[in-house]
Length: 77
Image (tube, rainbow, N blue to C red; front, side):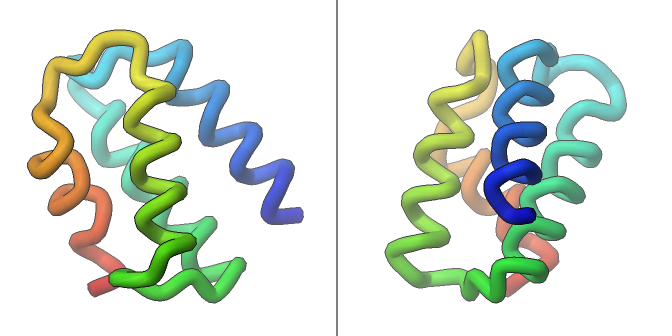
């Protein structure tokens, strides 16, 4: 199940523009869901790896990584 969700998350990010109105909130919801279902805690190597991979999936890096990380972790910290 988690693999399918990660694949969906990857496709979502790679086909989206971070600057679009609802994309950041939707991406954070997907990331949070994956973490909750897979029991991935913040400040773990698995969480860090998922964050770094997902940042690379963004077609354009219009947000600095540190801001992306803080935004995505808001609901699991």
